[in-house]
Amino acid sequence: MAWYKKLHWQIILGLLLGTLYGVAAANWGWGGFTANWIAPFGKIFLNLLKLIAMPLVLASLVCGVASLSDFKKLSRMGGKTIGLYLATTAVAVTIGLLVVNTINPGKKLPPETRAQLQEQYKSDVAKRSEVAEETKARGPLQPLVDMVPSNFLEASGNNRAMLQVVFASLLFGAALVLVEERKRKPIYDVFAGLQEVVIKVVHLIMLMAPIGVFALIADTISTMAKDDPSQIISLLGSLGWYCAAVIIGLALHATIVYLGLLKLLTPLSIKQFFKGIGQAQLLAFSTSSSGATLPVTMKCAEENLGVSKEVSSFVLPLGATINMDGTALYQAVAAVFIAQASGIELTLAAQVTIVFTAVLASIGTAAVPGAGIVMLIVILEAINVPGEGIALILGVDRILDMCRTVVNVTGDSTVATIIAASENQLDPPSG
Ligand code: ASP
Picture 1 (tube, rainbow, N blue to C red):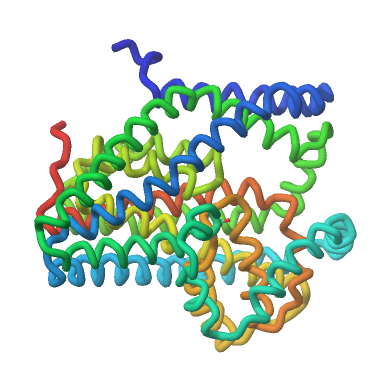
Picture 2: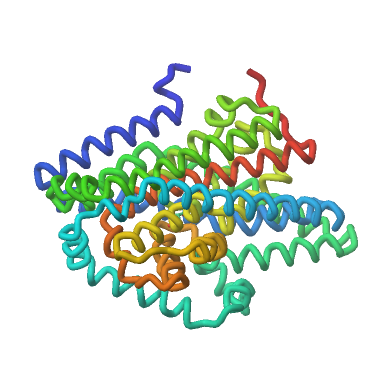
């Protein structure tokens, strides 16, 4: 097949053309046209992905757990998965802290820029602080309580309540293992059938991906620039060191931790891995949502990396919900940056607090655009840095969100590949 007929090249083309269009739109003041005539296609594409995410999580997890015919296997795989997720996230935060403490971006921010940013983003901060305030006011065990839904339909009707659906699906799947075979079979078949259908729907939705990605990127750039591209450039200039710290940290984490683990623990070559999940990474970058990317992450892991359905159905939906290395790393860098810019020295104890709170906060972060910055406020308060400090970084958050979401999705795929290899359930493509 000619290269340009391959979907991933078409998506890359959509991304490039969308970027060019976005810059042109910002330059020539086409903001209104873009919002009315281009952005809706991105929204439709995103809605389609979100539409399929919840049924996919439900069907995959129920089948994933119920097919692990005994509890021993379930607890072994569950233990390994959660252990790897937590360990890689803690390493990500530590890398973030090392990088930000080496570059010290907050100390390089001119005081006038700080004052100007704080003024410009005052109202945005108020909105996010309210949400963070509610999160904080709810006692230390509230995240546990939040995980358990009291009404399944309500939980499955809210994409932000993915963790509740994960919990209910795990419980249901586990109970299904305990039911006698004759009664289990028809129910299992329904969920397995549903999973097949959902994957087919994902294939259909992906046909629209090049256009969807074009529209999403074009709209993101044109909205950020607000018909004045010099704004983005000056923001990037003043916050350049901060953005560099986040991006260097993310790149280090991906190369040292993911590539290292893949080399050590799986037979896949690095090229095979990145070629295999490229589509999911592109989508993570353009949607800034690992939840919306999940259907494609699963498709890539199964079809291109050779991860068994049993492993991918269990590891990936769980990862999309609780494993966010990129977000945790970014939160660590951002917290130290804001502290430095506000003239607050962070003690070693405060930095250790960042490691713990960032790991927990990234678990609780919803897999949707911009969720990481709300949880960042909670981390800031834990180390006694005023939450209003996020005004400094709001302007560039979308760009960093795109990058950290790519790392979140890459981390989930890495762990899925490792678990599959350790369970003898990895059948890598030849070549
Ligand atoms: N957008 C990220 C994700 O969906 C979460 C965040 O860091 O805001 O993975």
